[in-house]
Image (cartoon, rainbow, N blue to C red; front, side):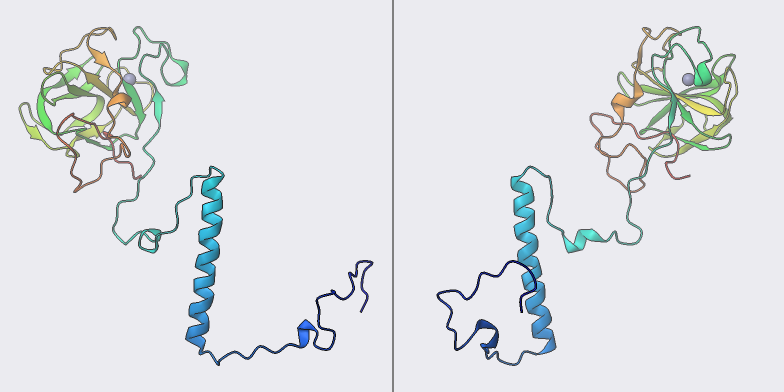
Length: 238
Ligand SMILES: [Zn+2]
């Protein structure tokens, strides 16, 4: 039947007496499961070809691994950490409030009462209340590293107490010089946690110390002791 203008006519190699569509190929009877198996094998072959082509053209594609496709129940799924509302070194706070000094840490959004977690194993070297910092805790993690937690509503540790990474050390709030609820988190490059008001006086950018891959604290994880890497000082799950 001529349905369009294109009709190449019979091929010179075609046997006119037995057109291709009349040829019967006798196939052995296949069971349903054998057919399914064949179809799956063909699909996998096609998938391999497509993935090879994608890899050759520069796309980073990994073949699917059936055991990795589904996250088993209870497994740790990386979560997005709460936002940083004022960065290290900024001259303005959240909402553009001017600062007297460059910001010596980062401000993490956290509603009042959010548990504040130790960012690594250590010992509590300072606690107290101050006009600017409000209620605060400082944890030492060994030579050249301490972390500070400001504007707390509650202090949950005592001086000298040993803490493990992820242990609650208090609750966030907005005590001291804070215009919105948040946790001010700082990294002091002195074991004693005695850094000054100026950013040059011993402070470092905390984001450079996050645990690579996932900065969120995940319980029952083996964090390498050296070099000390920090995890988020508030839970990542809301
Ligand atoms: Zn701050």
